[in-house]
Amino acid sequence: MKKYHVSTTINGEPVEFLCEPQQTLLDVLRDTLNLTGSKEGCASGDCGACTVIVDGRMVCSCLMLGVEAEGRTVTTVEGIATGDTLHPVQQKFLEHAALQCGFCTPGFIVAAKALLDENPNPTEEEARYWLAGNLCRCTGYDKIIRAVLDAASEMRREAAE
Image 1 (spheres, rainbow, N blue to C red):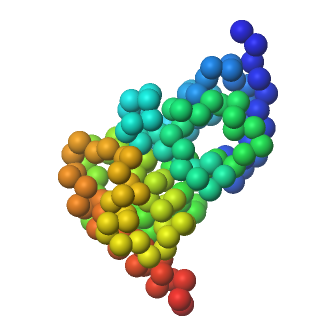
Image 2: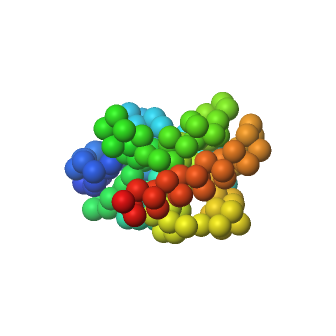
Protein backbone atom coordinates (compact mmCIF):
# COMPACT_ATOMS: atom_id res chain seq x y z
CA MET A 1 0.00 0.00 0.00
CA LYS A 2 1.20 3.49 -0.83
CA LYS A 3 2.54 5.57 2.07
CA TYR A 4 2.16 9.32 2.26
CA HIS A 5 4.80 11.78 3.43
CA VAL A 6 3.45 14.13 6.10
CA SER A 7 5.16 17.26 7.41
CA THR A 8 3.69 18.69 10.58
CA THR A 9 4.56 20.25 13.92
CA ILE A 10 4.11 18.09 17.00
CA ASN A 11 4.70 19.50 20.47
CA GLY A 12 6.46 22.50 18.99
CA GLU A 13 8.90 20.49 16.87
CA PRO A 14 8.82 19.96 13.10
CA VAL A 15 8.10 16.31 12.36
CA GLU A 16 7.97 14.26 9.18
CA PHE A 17 6.60 10.76 8.88
CA LEU A 18 5.26 8.25 6.41
CA CYS A 19 1.84 6.74 6.91
CA GLU A 20 -0.72 4.70 5.06
CA PRO A 21 -3.93 6.50 4.10
CA GLN A 22 -6.08 4.59 6.58
CA GLN A 23 -3.79 5.09 9.61
CA THR A 24 -5.27 7.25 12.32
CA LEU A 25 -3.32 10.06 13.90
CA LEU A 26 -3.44 8.02 17.12
CA ASP A 27 -1.74 5.08 15.38
CA VAL A 28 0.92 7.37 13.93
CA LEU A 29 1.57 9.06 17.30
CA ARG A 30 1.86 5.78 19.19
CA ASP A 31 3.34 3.37 16.64
CA THR A 32 5.43 5.57 14.36
CA LEU A 33 6.47 8.49 16.58
CA ASN A 34 6.59 6.67 19.95
CA LEU A 35 4.37 9.28 21.61
CA THR A 36 2.42 6.80 23.71
CA GLY A 37 0.70 9.20 26.11
CA SER A 38 -2.48 9.28 24.05
CA LYS A 39 -4.42 6.08 24.65
CA GLU A 40 -6.87 4.10 22.54
CA GLY A 41 -9.92 3.45 24.64
CA CYS A 42 -12.73 3.06 22.13
CA ALA A 43 -11.51 3.82 18.56
CA SER A 44 -14.83 5.60 17.96
CA GLY A 45 -14.37 9.04 19.55
CA ASP A 46 -16.52 8.26 22.58
CA CYS A 47 -14.04 8.12 25.49
CA GLY A 48 -11.56 11.00 25.07
CA ALA A 49 -8.50 8.95 26.04
CA CYS A 50 -6.81 9.91 22.76
CA THR A 51 -7.52 13.65 22.95
CA VAL A 52 -4.93 15.92 21.32
CA ILE A 53 -5.01 19.58 20.32
CA VAL A 54 -4.83 20.28 16.57
CA ASP A 55 -4.50 23.91 15.53
CA GLY A 56 -5.91 24.98 18.88
CA ARG A 57 -8.92 22.64 18.90
CA MET A 58 -9.54 19.41 20.78
CA VAL A 59 -9.57 16.36 18.52
CA CYS A 60 -10.01 12.67 19.16
CA SER A 61 -6.89 11.37 17.45
CA CYS A 62 -8.60 8.02 16.83
CA LEU A 63 -10.97 9.82 14.44
CA MET A 64 -8.40 11.85 12.53
CA LEU A 65 -6.25 10.34 9.81
CA GLY A 66 -2.51 10.76 10.06
CA VAL A 67 -2.40 12.30 6.58
CA GLU A 68 -4.73 15.05 7.81
CA ALA A 69 -1.94 16.31 10.08
CA GLU A 70 -0.13 17.71 7.03
CA GLY A 71 0.83 21.32 7.74
CA ARG A 72 -0.98 21.38 11.07
CA THR A 73 0.15 21.92 14.65
CA VAL A 74 -0.50 19.04 17.05
CA THR A 75 -0.07 19.04 20.83
CA THR A 76 -0.13 15.76 22.73
CA VAL A 77 0.11 15.22 26.46
CA GLU A 78 3.88 14.93 26.02
CA GLY A 79 3.93 18.57 24.89
CA ILE A 80 1.93 20.05 27.78
CA ALA A 81 4.81 20.42 30.28
CA THR A 82 7.64 22.86 29.68
CA GLY A 83 10.83 20.84 30.08
CA ASP A 84 10.80 19.46 33.62
CA THR A 85 8.17 22.00 34.75
CA LEU A 86 4.66 20.59 34.82
CA HIS A 87 1.80 22.62 33.40
CA PRO A 88 -0.52 23.84 36.20
CA VAL A 89 -3.18 21.35 35.07
CA GLN A 90 -0.71 18.48 35.47
CA GLN A 91 0.45 19.76 38.86
CA LYS A 92 -3.11 20.15 40.14
CA PHE A 93 -4.03 16.65 38.95
CA LEU A 94 -1.25 15.39 41.22
CA GLU A 95 -2.14 17.65 44.16
CA HIS A 96 -5.84 16.75 44.01
CA ALA A 97 -5.20 13.04 43.38
CA ALA A 98 -7.34 13.41 40.25
CA LEU A 99 -6.17 10.13 38.81
CA GLN A 100 -6.20 6.52 39.78
CA CYS A 101 -5.33 3.99 37.10
CA GLY A 102 -4.14 6.84 34.84
CA PHE A 103 -5.47 5.49 31.55
CA CYS A 104 -7.80 8.46 30.96
CA THR A 105 -5.49 11.05 32.53
CA PRO A 106 -3.61 12.15 29.38
CA GLY A 107 -6.86 12.85 27.56
CA PHE A 108 -8.27 14.77 30.52
CA ILE A 109 -5.09 16.84 30.86
CA VAL A 110 -5.08 17.77 27.18
CA ALA A 111 -8.81 18.57 27.25
CA ALA A 112 -8.40 20.64 30.42
CA LYS A 113 -5.55 22.61 28.85
CA ALA A 114 -7.70 23.26 25.77
CA LEU A 115 -10.51 24.45 28.05
CA LEU A 116 -8.27 26.85 29.95
CA ASP A 117 -6.73 28.13 26.70
CA GLU A 118 -10.27 28.93 25.51
CA ASN A 119 -11.79 30.01 28.84
CA PRO A 120 -9.35 30.89 31.64
CA ASN A 121 -12.16 31.32 34.19
CA PRO A 122 -14.64 28.47 33.71
CA THR A 123 -17.46 27.76 36.11
CA GLU A 124 -17.81 24.24 37.46
CA GLU A 125 -20.71 23.68 35.07
CA GLU A 126 -18.64 24.87 32.09
CA ALA A 127 -15.72 22.62 33.09
CA ARG A 128 -18.02 19.61 33.46
CA TYR A 129 -19.62 20.32 30.09
CA TRP A 130 -16.24 20.77 28.34
CA LEU A 131 -14.85 17.53 29.80
CA ALA A 132 -18.03 15.51 29.22
CA GLY A 133 -16.41 13.76 26.24
CA ASN A 134 -13.70 12.28 28.47
CA LEU A 135 -14.66 9.17 30.39
CA CYS A 136 -13.13 7.87 33.62
CA ARG A 137 -14.06 4.65 35.37
CA CYS A 138 -12.07 5.28 38.57
CA THR A 139 -12.25 8.80 40.00
CA GLY A 140 -15.88 9.86 39.82
CA TYR A 141 -14.91 13.20 38.19
CA ASP A 142 -15.10 15.45 41.28
CA LYS A 143 -11.34 15.43 41.89
CA ILE A 144 -10.74 16.07 38.20
CA ILE A 145 -13.06 19.09 38.18
CA ARG A 146 -11.49 20.47 41.39
CA ALA A 147 -8.03 20.07 39.85
CA VAL A 148 -9.05 21.90 36.66
CA LEU A 149 -10.70 24.77 38.54
CA ASP A 150 -7.71 25.07 40.87
CA ALA A 151 -5.35 25.12 37.86
CA ALA A 152 -7.49 27.86 36.29
CA SER A 153 -7.24 29.90 39.48
CA GLU A 154 -3.46 29.46 39.65
CA MET A 155 -3.02 30.36 35.99
CA ARG A 156 -5.05 33.55 36.46
CA ARG A 157 -2.92 34.48 39.50
CA GLU A 158 0.28 33.87 37.51
CA ALA A 159 -1.03 35.98 34.60
CA ALA A 160 -1.85 38.85 36.98
CA GLU A 161 1.70 38.92 38.42
